[in-house]
Image (tube, rainbow, N blue to C red; front, side, top):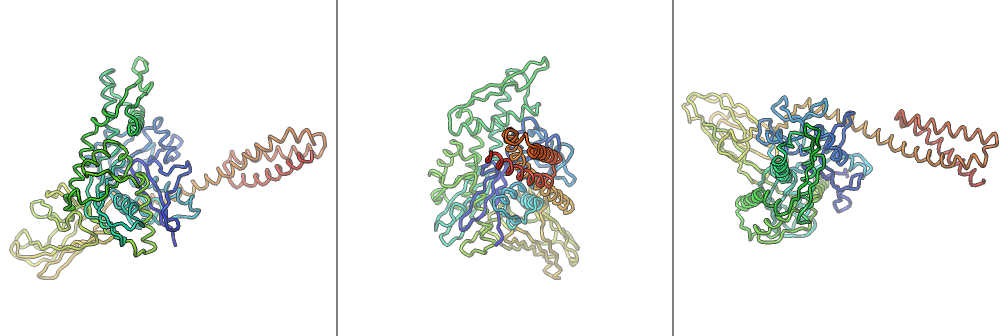
Length: 607
């Protein structure tokens, strides 16, 4: 059975899991960590860095280090969220050729799916190292409130990374799968998922027969830990500005140091009441005078700075219950997901709203990847003991006369589904009608996301309102939307399969896939070289340690001097091969060094 990995592509950290036997296992990276920072950087030498190593050098290479790319994925350049990111990011964000978002690192411009694909490729490598075999298939999670364009952009990122993304599933749903899997539960639960960049609440019914049914889901794709960090940064910057009349945001390295310090302080305040933020030499004045930043942040201050953010999450919980037509008393368990749920104020607010202590039985950073792996195993093994019924997070419909939005499929409709509605023409003798397919909750079409359009032609000429057109929307289990329009008088019909856009063309995706494949070949070659290099260095160190003893025992004999000369020559050749970064040449020298080491050990033993 082909392995399917489950990936939680997070704003701050990412995690990968796989089904082992009859249980999911979270896979550690080479550093032994189960999560990897979703950070990508390019060094001065043009080398790509991912994860912990990229995060560690962010301060000294702020302009070429990307974090929180997930907040930009699938968004249009004109969106307010992108404008906000442009003002607050230490890296350059530009407009792409298709009205999308591009990121500049060194001398190359990357699309957001391409940046995300680098993180996904790292997850693929971590899984392959663990399994000892190539991995092709993956289930990737996304925030429940992501729209179709954001989902497609995530899928494109997987494709670029060399993965066949067999399903995109919602993060809270994945968490519920992990929570309920194999437990024979009958419960109505709320999943409160507050991560680094996004917030979701989903209400689900979990059945002992293995049915996981989402009743409602809602959220905010621009609300998360990054916003809590931003409040701390604002507090530090305004205090420093009052004292020194200098805006630290104007210095990219200072801003990156502030960002790191804010995140660290926020995490510490989950377990202590106050913490010291100490940033020596944060900036220099024009007179070459170094200034320092030192402030004490208390938990109380942090809670005051961020209380409106926590309250926003509670309002969204209220909306999710309203959409599900349930009361707080109907919820039997509240599952906390995402790193931000470690904050005491968040836990207190959730407990106060739901009237019960939240369930902490799942790991907030790993549970989403675990759920994705469970779903992956269920799809390839066609398990009949687990059925997942999810919902469409946004309403779907068309634009009608007067730029209004007419809903056909309401938000939180269980998928797959199909709905039809009859419309009439708006002008006399109208022979064609343009169908604009939209997604969103606003009654005004302009405020919603346009997914596609097509034209139905050949209508019979008639006074306005006399031609009836039936519009049918259909969504399958993969979330693919198909829309058809038919003139009920003539039977004339036209349809479209709505393909959401990530802002990339197929040619661009192919070129990026080729680039990612080249990187993988190069990366594996580098790893192979590092492996044999390490072996060679160990042997050289051992041989050099034995040289004095060998010279003492056989150095006066001709054969001994000859053996020592040959050994020194083998060491020099190995060092030359390592300098040339030639793994095959180093491997040949390793064999020679092994023979030399065995000979030296034999001489010393007889010695």
